[in-house]
Length: 337
Image (cartoon, rainbow, N blue to C red; front, side, top):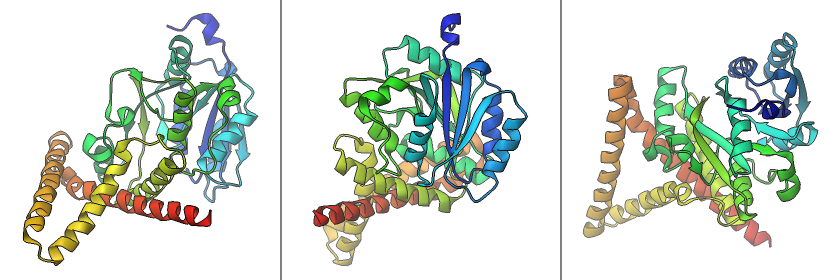
């Protein structure tokens, strides 16, 4: 239970948005249901020059409520710069960063403030469970929340409360940005990982609490998921190069998978029998694991989830190919030096 004194702390909620008309109403509805004192809250939407009705919906929904809000514009149109615009224009001491593709339980802000005040940590966040509004969306949600899909990402797969390498979005005190700087605008992706690495490098801690869950809506088509996987792979590899130690081993496994497929294909074409057998043996193990995780989804969510069997490798391959393009980006940077 939060004490009355801590309830009175003022909070600035920063939300980068870009073409979010499909999700923004659900986000705003969940914000308006928060049990945190609305008189102590301001909401800052930072729009990356949306071409849809995102800003129109925000103004319509928020104008109906007695809550302090503003909409700002970010011409750079990338998340880290949007977050930085919001933070720099926030007037309160506690900064809560949110994502527009998500919905939040009514006690989310209260829980974040409570944990920031009572845990020895510089950034706190909770479990992020994917939601879905379609059958294919449900399959994608199962893929990106499984250990086979995303590795040992604690906030995606579920974990005990404790110190971790990163959390989704985050809650911070303003003074943290004075100490370690703002989000790195050189990174359109992976900026959270880099920022949390900087926290830990400077002696701080990142804490995950598991008694609250965010509902995050991932990409709702296979094509969009693959596109996301490609970009994530590209920027994870690049981030790992420019700031060593930022990314975990799990971020590079899809790269090894794709390189293995390329080498295996070459070996097969050269008719190297022993190596070909080894290649297909390893590949068989991959698809057995794929099948087991797919069947788990089928048992819990129905026969439509058989499509997970295809989504897993497509997601891994797109991420791995993105990682290869990340290597090209690194080489280009090195050559320019």
